[in-house]
Image 1 (cartoon, helix red, strand yellow):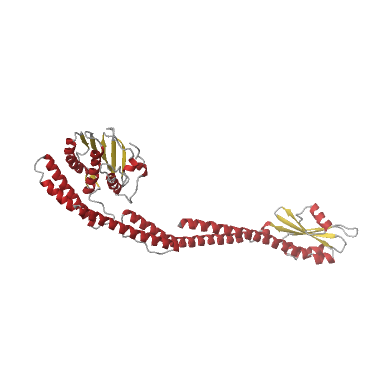
Image 2: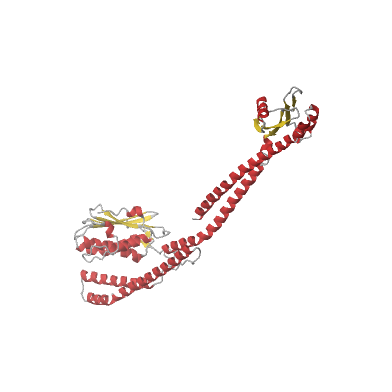
Length: 453
């Protein structure tokens, strides 16, 4: 915007300078020409009194010598011969004889172009009854005297005006653009998660209104997030009573693998609820700090050990690859556990018993990819599956599982894609980048891979 204002001002000032400087320069050139010809007229008129008195050659030579043009050998005189007087031809003629004869015959002053300048031909009646022609040579230097200097002055003034206008436009533009830059910076900080950023309401009226709207939006977002955290904490807290009853009932189941698994699941669920409450109540992490992260391979091994018991009961073949060495990811351990459980839970919920599945981990310096594949029927609408609340609504599905996975991936600058697996069913690919993104974003070219399974 700032440079746009400078360019507009530069174009407008340049057009104004050209519109005035060019005609003014032409006027200066015309004035210089008129001045030179007027001076030549005066030089020629100075000979007229002598011509009116006498046609004597010696006296006319003395009259011509007294003029400035005569002293510079730029004046000439021709008097045609008569019956009583011979012709008189004085000075160095530059005009042709035809031009002199034409001026004498018509009796009007005229100018003709000659090598090196112009020749002013001024007819004058003499005492012998004929018409003499006074020729005054005007060199090109006199015709353009002072024109170059005037053009340089005009050019200097024009350049000065353009530079001054550009400087003023840049100054005004910087004052106008500064509030917009602050607003853009605040929006960028808000996108990175700094909910406390606010913009001073300064600058033009439109930018003040935009700053006020941004501050109101930031207040609203902060309030909504606070209310969401409180709601999550309250809802989680309400689960403690039925969890307590469930834990007591599980304790009375006695011994056996099924009872042990039930008690372990209830204990894990109670721990997750407590973690949700603590996280929702905690103050948010300082902006710009990286999460502590975790070892994705360790989390996968732990969760696969938990789900393998259920897979064995249902006759499912399980395979894990790439989790035999440490794989650090910038995701909190609890978040990764929740995302992995959501994906594995979908496998058990939406595929028949006996369906095989696998978990693969691929890592590089830039990113970590977690693939959860199954041999089930696949996903009919992959794009809708990752949108919050768009589950099929059946079998207890709320449509929030893959949305949790998506938010975990996008928090690192990655994404989630659903496609066809090598096992013949659905494949959920989670892309976790190892570098913190500058702002939360959606990777369009990767999101484009959400095609039908």
